[in-house]
Amino acid sequence: MLKVAVASEQDMVTEHFGHCQNFNVFDTENNEIVKHESVPNPGHRPGFLPNFLHDLGVNVIISGGMGGGAIEIFNEKDIEVIVGAKGPAREAADAYLQGFLKSTGSVCHEHAHHGECE
View 1 (cartoon, rainbow, N blue to C red):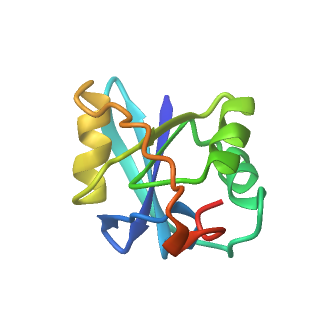
View 2: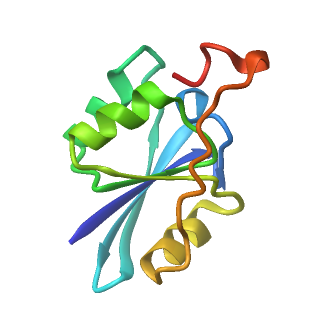
C-alpha cells in the first residue's frame, strides 16, 4: 500500500506547501485510490510538517511548490517529493499513480514569499 498526500486548499493543489489549508491523504493499492481523508494543516513551523506527514505513514507528498528545507527532510525520511503540480488534488494523486505526474523541481526561492515556503 502507498499513501499519497497532496498539500491542498480544500480540494485543489496548493502553491505553498507550508501554508496549505489541509492535506488530502489517499491510501492506494495497485495504483488505485482506496481511501481518502482530509487532514487539516496542524500549523507551519520549520521542519514540523515533514515529520507530521511521516508519522501519518505518507510515502509521497505532492505540492505546487515547496522550500528546500522541507524537501531535504522528506528526502531523509524516504518520502518522495513531487512539486509543480496543480489542479484538483485527487487528479494529481491519480496522475502520480499512473506515472504521468513528475516533479518539476519547483523549489520556492521567490523573495515575495521569502521564508514562507520553508
